[in-house]
Image (cartoon, rainbow, N blue to C red; front, side, top):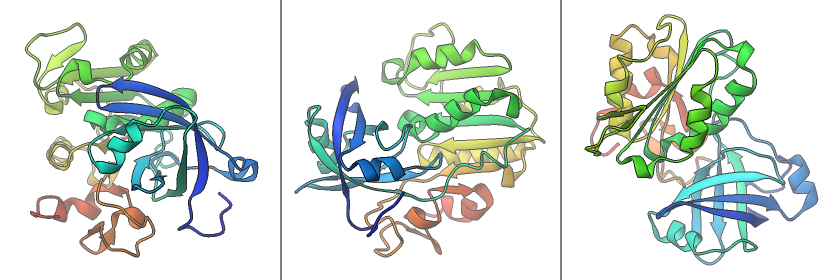
Length: 278
């Protein structure tokens, strides 16, 4: 993207707003400057800094689109995101980005692809799933595992159902706190899906996002099952305020999540994932 200063946001208009769940909403954005819109591009797994004038700024994964059709899904959990949830279509915000590292899709060509997500962790991988679906012949089997607390918190379930019908594609869904077993749904955390997943453990790439504890436990289990650690990638969430590694709020060991991540190969972060306060 062409920009003069990585600290200065570009104005964007909220074209559409979708209330996904009581605390989660999706924005479709368009940069108001046609030149900015034309030159904007992102790599799958990167994030933007969304700025609400007079309130603050938050890091949000890019789901899909370009500078005239940019999608973000946001959960209202803090002061800034709760204020954002009140904005109607037609409002204007600031956008900086994109920032950070990306999922290794080029490295994954010819291999089985496994996505493991929990909660709103599905948002950072949605653009990658859609890319693999659109370039299906370039990849092996596609396995998608998604865990939520309750089924009614699931986002884009019709999309998951459509993917389930694709050739060489397996979609596994689970709810950890529901008591009713729904068709095509399991009960429990994402770990209950690992034994059901069908992929080549010695020829795959795993892309994972969600709570740290889930990623730590699942990545360790996958390695025990025979998946090479260097084939497992995780997307971390930390307090990213500057997005360029200057403020230090997102420091993780000797790395900065905003600049060196948010996507990391598992061996690079495994030693720190079990350290309290990291």
